[in-house]
Structure formats: structure tokens, C-alpha cells
Length: 389
Image 1 (cartoon, rainbow, N blue to C red):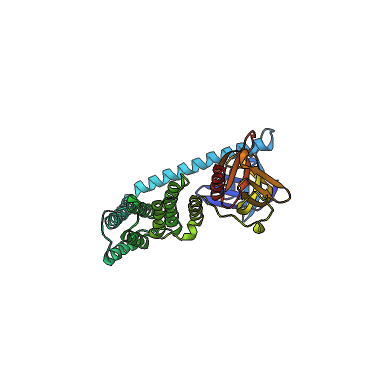
Image 2 (image 1 turned 90 degrees about the vertical axis):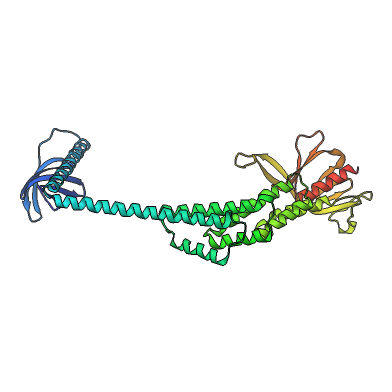
């Protein structure tokens, strides 16, 4: 036999016992109980925190098997206790009908309150959406300060949590996108339309980064449309400038795109006669019969297949030096020279994304890859010089 200390919680004739070895259930009267625990069936007796317990005889079996069966018995007892308490509660309600009526009434009142509140929230959100549409989408004129003030008052009364808040956010985002689509239907932003965009941004609680991302997506679409043929017309350039101004896009956010546009326009301006570079300003000597027309930093890259790269290839630097373009050849010099004569070139391809020029030589399966800060301009210059050979 053994003596021990334990903790328990009573529920009518049943008792839930807790110890570090597990849990169990017991039933009986004070001083004499029978129960089930992690190690099987047992009886116990005693009071005031000091107890005597003895396990009932069980067939010989492993401890894990006994514990599994004891847990199963405990679950059955828990179900019995739950059913017993449930039946007792139902019986008590039948014997006390006034309590049941009050409970049902309270439940109906609470449900009605929540349904009415939900209906009111939906109505407020719908009215707010209709007001936004009438002010910014269907209207052909700028909203007055009074109209904007009324919208802000409606907005303050809207729910600020739960599904209603999400719904309001989606409505505002849709209205903002619809206004931009309406404004840009003709591809040009007027002063009044720019003012309308500023007004809607003042009212709507859209995240500044969401607004900026939306505007940049619109600009990017016009940008790609303009450069797809690697030529920029005056109309295309004016449209891009208008979008930057009309949508109030910070120029720093589109600096890369503007750089590409400028490079394309510079490349378009190339024509004979070309201005040559004095020999004393070159990083390397050239032949007397040569004239240099461009000099810049450049890298010769080697390429190999890679599963980790999105393009399927990765590049490494083979030579990092200075590129000089003459009327006869291209060469990159630094600890050796990569030399390409125009008569050897079969094709030229410019990759704007990677900033590289791929030059395919006649009779060679591997292109020479040159990386430079102005690949479009350099590619156009090489093409022009090749055509003059």
C-alpha cells in the first residue's frame, strides 16, 4: 500500500483527480470511493489530504496496455458524466418553465439585436459606396468642399472592425481603380482630372503604398507600350510625362524607366557624320586608320546554365575593363583584350533587362556577351557603324 497527496475537482457524485502521472475519475461517498486512473482501477479511503489507495487485481500485461485501457475507461466516464449533467439540466428547466421562457426571450432579444446591427452596418456601407460612386465615378464635375465634407462625415460613422471594415476597404480600392480607369480612358490626364484624383485620395483611407503601386502599374503599361519597338515618338514621350505629372508620381520612383527612355532617344539621334574621340583621350592606342566614336566601362561575361536563375542562365565576369568602339572594331581592354571586328559579326541582340549586348560571330556557336550601362545606345552605334562598312 502507499500514502500520497493529491488534488481533485468535484462534479456531483463524480470527482476528477489530477496528478503528474495523468488524470482519472472516481465516484462514491466521502472516505470511500472507486475510480479509474492512468494505471487502472483502484479503491481509496481517507480524509483531510492523507489517503490510502490499493489497485484492484488485473491480468498481467504491459504498462502501456493498462494505461490505454484506463484512458478509454476515463473517456467513457466523461461521456456518462456529460450526459447525466445534460439530462439533469433539461429536467431542471422543465420543472422551472419561467427560467426557460426568460432564457429563450433573452436569446431572441440578443439575436434580434445582432441582426439589426448587422443590417444597419450593411446599409451604412451601401450608402457610402453609392455616395462615392456619385461623387467620383458618375459625376462629370469636381466635387465641392461641402460634398467632400459630407463624405468624410459618412466615413467616420462606418464600422472600423470585422467584415464591414474589410468590405469598406475593398469598396474604396474599387472606386479608386475605377476613377483611374475613367481618367485614363483617353490616355491623357487633364488638370481637372488630376484635381479629381487628388480629391479622392484625400477622402479615401487607402494606404499610400497601395496608391503608389497602382499608379506605377499604369505608368509601366504605357512605358512598355512605348519602348516595345525600341523607338520613342514625341507623342509617346509626352504621354509618359503627362502620366508622371497628372498622377503625381515621384520621378525617383520611375527613374529607371526614364533612363531607358532617354537612352532610346539618344540612340535614335545617332546618325552620320559621328563625332570622333581624340586619340589622347582613349584608354588604349588605336591604329592610324581607325577613328574612335565611343568609350565606356564594360564587362565581358561568360554564361552557363543554372537551375537557380529565373532566366535559366547565370553570368560571371570574364573581363572588366574599358570598351572602345571604332569604325573597324569593338575591343574591351584590361589584363588582355577581347577584340571583335565588324566583318566577323553575324548578329547583335540587346537585352534591356540584364543590360547586355550579345554579339554572335560568324562560325561560332557562343555569343560574346558585353555588359554596359547603356546597352541600347551602344547596340545602335555598333549597328550604325556596321552598316557604314
